[in-house]
Image (cartoon, rainbow over all chains, first blue to last red; front, side):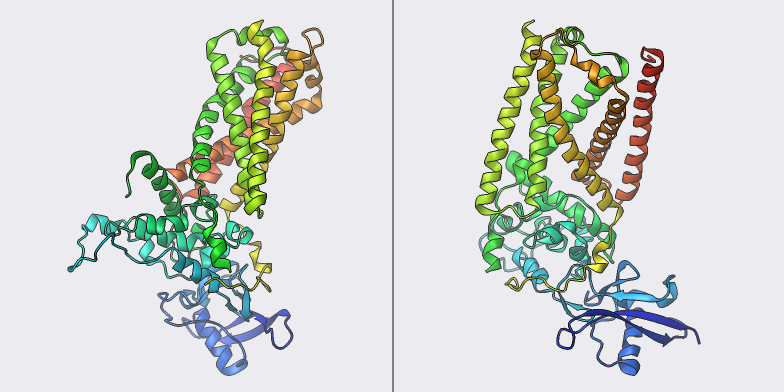
Length: 239
Length: 120
Length: 133
């Protein structure tokens, strides 16, 4: 049975407060994911290791980690496909740490909430569902796949420099609702992102495009929002 | 409370948009500037041959366009960089004011420097 | 509500991650700041030559070999900043964000080619006393 060596980032604020590395050897047969490897370590080798996970199918975004120098979802990363040994597992870079592989996502989700991530109507909510053509829906195919794993947020130099910058994920979601034909939020959402710690803090560094495990494109979404801001001011077009 | 901090920082669309406009102007102006001066007419610059060139309206237009665009683009770029390093509130107002003063002074200095060729 | 506690124990070790787009951004910034410094020098040199009188030709200073090298560095900065700016303008129009790496390689290659043309012209001038065209 082949074996994989996991080199895992350990940090326990209550015990020593130092960051250190610990190596574990995990046997595997055919298709072991990094998340399953972590389960094995937790069950058989060291019960004190902490990590976030939930769906195990790349839908929930809980298990985004920095594995072998790349942003990956632990649940969809197959150990067989990782070329370098040992397999280095770290929490998301530049995020406040809680314990071991768990980082503090409070800011990240507060910023997501801040852009009002829901469809709003100008006056009264209609009794029936609002219709949308398949073409218009097709425009949203990309951003709705975002699972809020935080990889792009963690990779963005603008976020590293400015705590108040909303970050690629929140702005991708702002795009998702601004580009939606059913949404009539207009100024209600606009003030949250159309400023210098919103879209204009993005310098098209494109780290987010490289980092995203779902291969989405926050940069393009942010550029669309910037363009829409100009179109709105010059031509008075909202969509 | 951080939520209140988040509310600040309005504006930003015009600096961003004008940076793009001046970028396009500079792509035109600098291409003309570099190709005409340093590739086609390579040689020693003198007061007279610069004056000859500035006798044509096309070069006066391009050079003045370059002056305005490059000063705006450069100082706005500096602002964009500095804002990434924690300029907020009154510090930011002071930064904006300082950059406007530097910009106006640089353009005035540039026109003053051009003047002998235009009146010669 | 955004957490009030300051960021501590960040996993900065791994934060050395730099994508290709980030190198483009760093180079764009550094060349941009260098060009701003050059801009002010440029204006003051123009002022010195036009207001300093036509007799003392200050352009002779710039024919020393060190200035030829500095001029080529300057050309590299201008050409890279311009071409990468073009790449950013394409992003603004919603073109090529998925292909940002290829675009960056393209920008670097084009910068090298344009720089080679300028270097050829300047060394041709130095050795022959006239331009190649």
